[in-house]
Image (cartoon, rainbow, N blue to C red; front, side, top):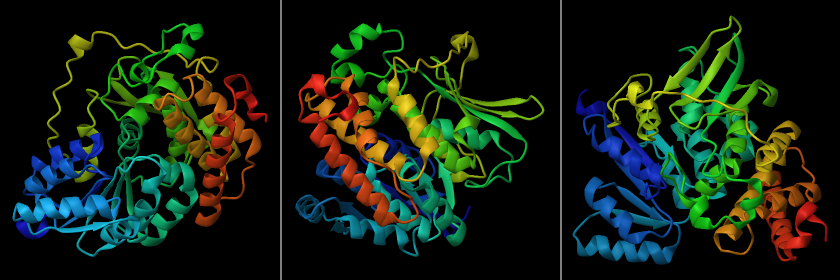
Length: 405
């Protein structure tokens, strides 16, 4: 591959786990990829270190104060890198003509607008944050079809499904000949913990995932199984299927990342070590294959593969996500907003682990879903859901259930 064909990459959320793994893969292939944009929230020191290594043209921080601190450090080091701040800068950077690939890895609803800007600009968009499709799946798919953007999933489960579909499949369409999609799930750290003990779970315990190294918010989502519920909603948009066409399968070993069952009875599965560099490398180079740095899967060491159905009583967040997927409209956005607020409150020690689902259910009772045909309506319902969640969490724990005031 000659230098002229090197692809320029914008990594949104470069200091998070997905961003760090993306840069690891990119560093292995300097002849194929060049980092053009790096962005972070307020992690000035970490982004400075990444700028020193990858020398992007542009670095973006969430606020001007952090941007000013980064700008000083870069100037003192003699690095000629432009620094900017804010959501407008993010959207402009991913729309620039020089950017070929956008890794969308900003956690939470904050990643919605820049990811949508990349889709509207017709980029290859590697979607690592669930919120854009969960909140605005209809809009994202329609914009991708209009602009010609290529949407490639980075979640290990959705990437596995994508790999198991026909080679001519494109996200947003419905693949021919499939019966169902089977999304695997490790079961999280509390799969075997007695339900009576879940109310005493601490944030550190919830963030100790048995197989994956992730950020704290997504680790809590994995512990409540909300992560899998959001993935179910995302799968419906990515693969053009209904919630009834998706089955969640608890698979503690996290070796089979997901499966697709076809009408002829065939079930195709994608296997690999639990390492996010595999789906990242797949999406960066698609439709080609490149080295990701991931160790070879040793099936003899794995020895056995176990499967079991999820417990909806123990993990009500999965039930709530399924209900939101069925209602559609802004229901998934409401679910996501309530979950973000409740998870943060849990991490801050304000509510118990089991109250996360109670807060979400209370919000879904009070916040009636609207049609999700335009972004303003979606964002308005997102804000309304957060306000209701805050109101619910101000009550005593005994009043949280059902959202009654």
